[in-house]
Image 1 (cartoon, rainbow, N blue to C red):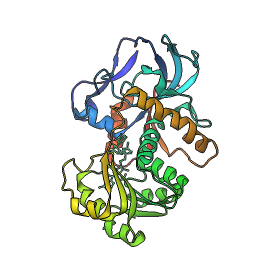
Image 2: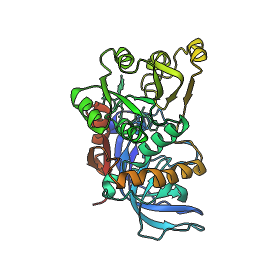
Image 3: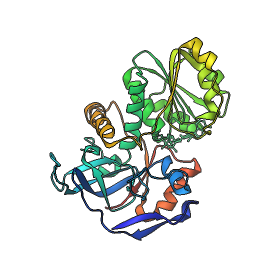
Image 4: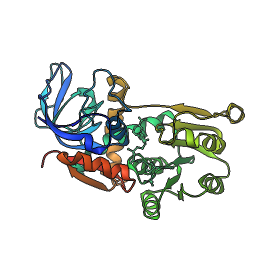
Length: 324
Ligand SMILES: NC(=O)c1ccc[n+]([C@@H]2O[C@H](COP(=O)([O-])OP(=O)(O)OC[C@H]3O[C@@H](n4cnc5c(N)ncnc54)[C@H](OP(=O)(O)O)[C@@H]3O)[C@@H](O)[C@H]2O)c1
C-alpha cells in the first residue's frame, strides 16, 4: 500500500510517499480501506519527533480515518466487507489501509461525505470524553481556546448544545467571526488581555476550561475558575511546566486534571466511540452540530498539509484525501 513516512524528525519536508506492506488483520480487528485521513496538531509533534506512537501502534502518522471495511478478523461481528466507516486510531492513518481494534470502528455520521467525515472522530472523541469528565452541564460557563481550530470548533458547538454559556478565543478577526457563527456567546482575541475580557463577561468565574495551552495559561485559568470549577488540560502548546497556586484551588474547591486520548486502552476508546454514535451522530443528523470548514490535500501532499496547519492560517480541519 501507499503510505506517508517521516524519514526523520523535522519539518514538513521529511514526509514522503512510500510503499509499505499491507496490514494483516488479527482477531478482533478490522482493516479499513482508507478514503481520507484527518490531520491533527499531534501529528505535527509526531513528525518533529516529539510524540512517539504508543507501544504496539503503527509508526505511520494519523489518528483518524474514514473509509470502507476491507477485512474482518476472527470474532468481529456487526460489520461486512464494504461497509462505510470512520475509525479512531492510535496511529497509521496516512495510508491506503489501516488495521484497527473493531471497537474503534463506527458507522460514519449520517449526512456528510466520507471525506468530510474523516476529520470528526478524533476531535469529537476528545471533546466529548473531556466534557464528560468535567461534567459540563446546562447553565455553566465554558471556556475553550482556539475556537476556530479542529478541537475548538467542535467544542464550541458541543458545549452550546449542552446548554452552556460558551466563551471562545481566537487569533484573528475572521476566526473570531467563525467562533460566533459556531455558537460562541463571547468570542475574544487571545492577542489582547483575554483574562480581563473573560472576567468581564463571566464575573462569577468559569465552570469548565478545556485547555490546549498548558503552562502559559495555567495561572490565569486557575484565577478564572469559579467555585468548584474544573480545568481540563488536553494540550501543551504553551509548555508543560508551570506554577500551580494550590491556595487558590483549595479556596475554590477546584479541580485541575490532564488527559490524553491516544494512549488510552482500546476498551476505553471503544466506549468513547459508542458515545459518539449514540450522542454526537444524532446531533450531526438533525443539524444541531455542523462539521467545521475543511481544507483538503491529496495524500501525496501530506507535507503541504502539515505546513498549512503549522502556519496558523487554517480554519477548521485539514484532511488528506487518500482515494477518490
Ligand atoms: N489530549 C488529547 O487527547 C488531545 C486530542 C486532540 C488534540 N489535543 C490537543 O488539542 C490542541 C488543539 O488541537 P487541534 O487539532 O484542534 O489543533 P489546531 O486545529 O491546530 O488548533 C490549534 C489552536 O490553537 C490556537 N492557539 C494558538 N496559539 C494560541 C494562544 N496563544 N492562545 C490561545 N489559542 C491559541 C489556534 O488559534 P488561532 O488559529 O485562532 O490562532 C488554533 O485554533 C492541540 O494542543 C492538540 O495537541 C489533545
